[in-house]
Length: 358
Image (cartoon, rainbow, N blue to C red; front, side):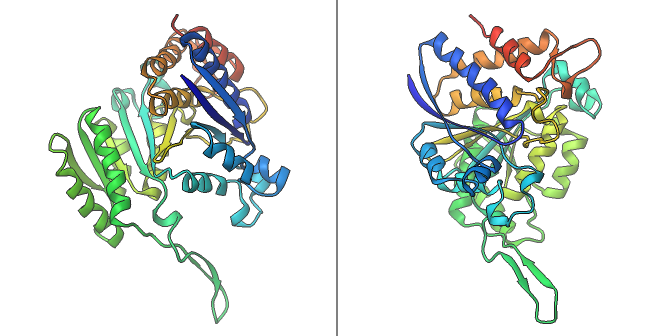
């Protein structure tokens, strides 16, 4: 097949890990007879430094005209003093909104050989295999009114608004139930329906959608209890369905159960063009040192092959190469343990490339 892939490396370690994923995608294309055309564009702080905005019109056009987008990471302390509307992170919100990406899928699966890298006991985390599904374009990050306004007597007031419509909840619930059907057929919906009206609607709509999926079990959990249960008994979860802010927080917690946030990919889907990125940030403290873990980005490329192009065999080949590389003892600094082979970013990418099945 032929596909056009927009490559947005972004900031910090994004500029080191994305080339490793592109390297693997090129090898897969050559091995399986596909043609992938890669088009690079600036985003985030790197774009701000060049043209003054985090999401240039040219970048957005390239993304919209592609078949999928591979993103690295954006942000860093260099740009923290900018007006909120001009910060690198606004590029992510803009891409999600403009590309119609309303569902974020974040798998959290423990590689058995990395169980000791987790901060939790092996008996607690063994067998973790969950999928966090986060609503991306609604909720408190997009609701209005929003802003900071002066108060008559002095001081200021910050305002953000949590808003969800029936349709926004329905469509993300459908994504969750469809995903559960391919897994262990369990959906846990996260809300705070005891105090938030938006969560009350969320629970009601999700319950209604479940009637169309009699083969999938639905349960509800308050977000504070969910945060606790993720640490106490993470094996109980299959598909976690969350609104925007709850999913943002809980997916990072789920990621750390596996030992390193550098291991986990994500897919943002909805309309025609999907966006695929590691869930970690730009890590400016280690940028440029060739020590960042590229596995999450390479695994995101595998998700791209699966979700954007329906190339299941090719996606599985990348996953197999990652597992084999880890089994052979290759480790970046974030997951290194005694007796393992410590390698850098490019060396890890090369090892995964070499371990692609013939």
